[in-house]
Image 1 (cartoon, rainbow, N blue to C red):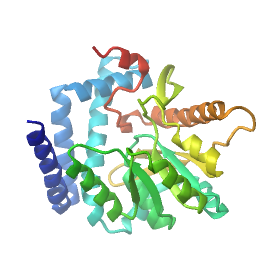
Image 2: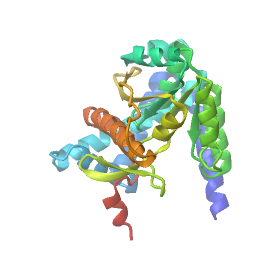
Image 3: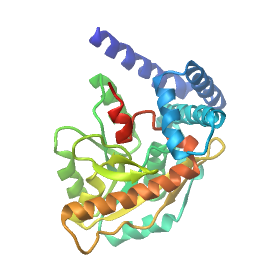
Amino acid sequence: MGALQDKLVDSLYGLGWAGVKKLPELAAVALGRRIADFAWKRRGKSVLRLESNLARVVPDAGPERLRELSQAGMRSYMRYWMESFRLPTMDPKRFITDVEFKDEHLLREALDSGRGVIVALPHLANWDLAGAWAIGHMNAPFTTVAERLKPETLYDRFVAYRESLGMEVLPHSGGAAFGTLARRLRSGGMVCLVADRDLSASGVEVDFFGATARMPAGPALLAQQTGAVLLPATLHYGETPKLYGRIHPEVKVPEAGTRTEKTTLMTQAVADVFASGIAEHPEDWHMLQRLWLDDLEERP
């Protein structure tokens, strides 16, 4: 049954990549909204989890406001998928015209320094489109890491999709990714990591919207080991097709403390930046899974 389910999932994603990219843009937007509203009305586990997560982000929101936010969140999430299905066939000029970053000079200066650059992002809006912007506008190809998905053919689709945009994609599992990322940084390259969730034992505990969550140690450790510039970035959607972002100031390696202490302080600083961006645009945070340790303890 598992193999059959894997094949079905892969087939559905394959249809999305093959079919949606052929639709006119407005038709794809409308389809995404219809799918999002259908999923939202069903009130499945993912929608309820999104709503629960948003309740922590907007603690003064009542039930009606939370439902509005979760509906907007599902629409934003499906917008990400519709855009992602279409990105490989999109005119590359649009990666520049449809994306605007505030304080992009911070990224430019970091790239020019030759130290290597780590960009850490949360699951906000469309990080793939932001990556295409970096490649097209900043002439900054980069390396990233992707979690191995099931079935394996689905993971292969994601890798091929991101590589078609000019990204180098490494598998998260296997243990070799960190060393490769470090080599890229030492040669002055750029690494981009989605870094607002890590439930493994190596995750760093941070205060996030008043409760404890775990986030990846990778960005902070890479900055310490390679001397690269660690820049958090946040994103949010505007009216279709606009994507907006901000490059935040460097999170510097503390001068004193053990490696663990430095990693904790730096990861907390990144989490604080993420929290500011998510609080400003909670509807664009695509966190449909458990994140906070309190929520994990509720699992039977």
